Image (cartoon, rainbow, N blue to C red; front, side, top):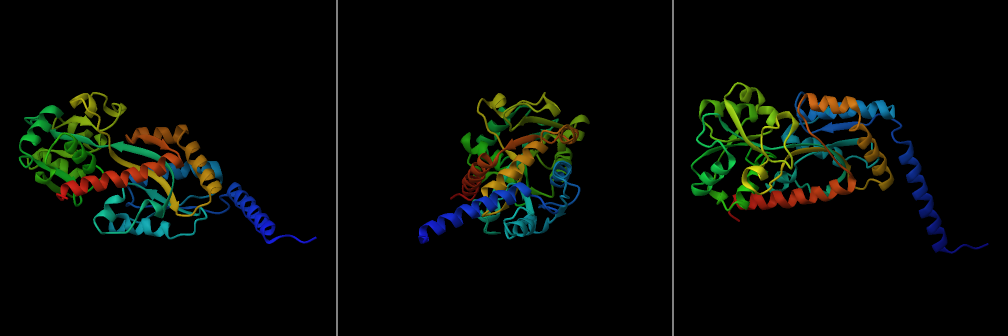
Length: 322
């Protein structure tokens, strides 16, 4: 019996789909490399190792963490986005749009398969305990009146995950952000020490990073950029509670792979991550260090990634006066 070319192609397509589903069901059949775009010992390394332990326990294969922090993580992002889309080289996806918008790399949302987000840590606004501004409303009013009057610490080249949400908030409150006095710092710890010594007026970082100095009576946290108060310090109001308008942002971490991963494989990995973040050991490990658990599935994480690029572009354009 003769078969048409069309019927042969349809059959081949069905065979390929069946094969892909079967391969996804068998994943992982060997170790899965997790590329972390930060150095050992930091928050990214810690959270990914917690996650890796749960994935190993559930799936029966090693999930070795490989730290590739070179060039602010660009090396790590390049490593896993250039890998085969078979699920055996995955990596950290965190705030990334600034690299492209500043001409440091050419990443777009289309370079990634955003599989699942598992962590989010909101930015918080800190001042000296002796500051003239003891609430966020008075601080914003002072910056609006004279945007260059205060020394505001920022990360790296002032496009970090802590800074972008704060500048977006000031934009929303009518501040001329081109006149802000943003001062790069070598990390949050150094910035907080400058705050304590009087060289900096405002520091933007997470609440856990400021806890020691706050407990010592040196630092005051005015607000946190989250939808709800954080369990680690529920005395700190949200931005919405402080000024009447909600502004949410900070850093976030998720698992991604290269573009072109099969939907069935993505679904398999997504389910494994969702299961991992529900385990008591993972939850306790995150809570012990003050890291927030925030899960987004593949569809929501993919949409969020596009929104991240759009917001970052808006803020960087505003800072440059474009």
